[in-house]
Image (tube, rainbow over all chains, first blue to last red; front, side, top):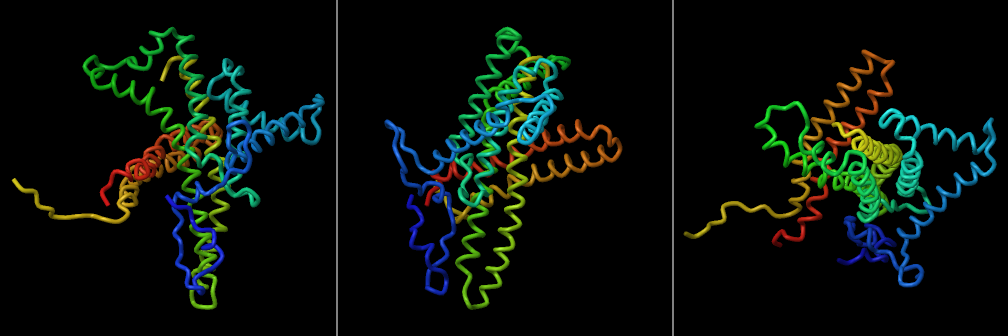
Length: 267
Length: 81
């Protein structure tokens, strides 16, 4: 797997360069920036650290001296908190209050990481690396499975997953394996893949059209295609803004649904 | 018995696979949002609940298309070149 030669980005079609169609290689061309102990930090890892600092820093700053009548940043932070609280109350109910801090951090961490995909200085969403959504989905998985086992008992937990009530008996032969696989194996997989694939595809799309806009910007008829690509990439940036917020929301919403399943044990 | 190669497909087959995988979820997402908008139009006061369930259904249907998107990257290495 060869990275895109950086010299290729310096010339365009008038210099006789071919258009390098962006492949998934573009995600792996970053050098190690610094090293702490034996952890090597490259750009995506640095962005994750920045996201942690930004999210934690903002909310600690906003709630440093909480007042009953909120002003300034506290107002904004409470708006954000209410948004997640309303979602939790609608999906989990009263029992979900314990999980608001978890879902709240999850939403804003994912959103800030997604947003780095279109922020001019970073231009790379760390969530487009499969390891990041997998790690997040694993945390969620390790939250709701033990939670369900504690709340419903180990047997009750599996019974609720395997035998949805109110069906004719022979149907369980077909349904039990499907339910077991879809709940315990496919669920965490789709949970992580959904976020990863959206961010990955979105970033690749932006890179493709930016590359086209740059490589075809010459004094020929290609300039029309270049202008069209530039228009498309501008529109796509707006679409990405929407998708990033939506995916962060869906990731948190599904977490809330899984936790609510584990708490109540019904489908 | 000898095997004869009757037809061969080369190139980015993954793209074709993704196109096929996107048909079902495409129809599904269309139905979800169509029915969702209809439900909101009939009962605007239930907007919050409807939107949430709409997005949930959207996420579940979309997962299939996204698995189709990821599959070429996962199985791409095994295709003979």
